[in-house]
Image (cartoon, rainbow, N blue to C red):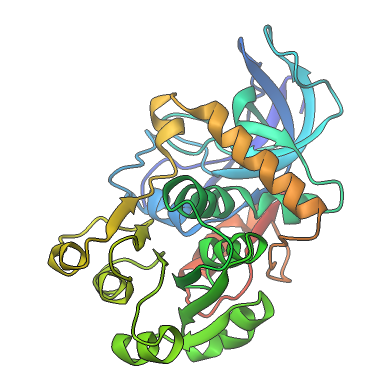
Length: 330
């Protein structure tokens, strides 16, 4: 293999295994940097895209998947002044809308989508942060304007988005509660939230933890019936429900009766539309700041995966029993 080539995983058919190939190494266009990928974070969304089931995040085939990544800058394109070869960076950079993903040795990415890697985290840890952190930040900070002392409920607290949401809410001084299954209680509590078993009746935990008033913010990362339950758990007048999976049909009556508000979070929009990418960079700079301050840390699955075993990594993430973020090392 020459220096002009690289190893990559190619998806040729939706639902099929990846094909391991040697292909041409990309060159950075104007405003892009070329990165030597060291780690690719795996998200449930990657699995949906691979299966052809992500209606809003199509990746035309043949494709290189992988939304999250961490790596080292090796070349900067024209117009890029914020990075130099040797910089260690991370970000949510590709794997959708024709953007090359991180399941490859090299990727050319929009410089606005990457930031400096936290100095105290490994490449594996950094690659596990972007999608979950950006989603949680957009919901809690951009949409709900979280404040110190608020009561915040996070549905699916042990998931990739939920883990980041708990830590961000805690850093802002909120009183944090999180629902999940019994086997995830230790994770939820490790991150500092009060655990609520997900089948407990909404009114029961609203009465217990808010004296019947409802939560100031409810963040739904599960969707479906859980979003309906979120409308029941929110407080009157200035309560705010956020969902990263609000794709179904839901009655807004419970929300309207309480004069509460709702916001959807669609994390991929800047990558799909090309607009607002610099804001993703700004959010990830907050992730670096918080990580270096000891306020956020991703929980990693202890198993190690590489390009040739990436199919196993994506299969594992479908199982709800997984507790840590799964990362493929390149």
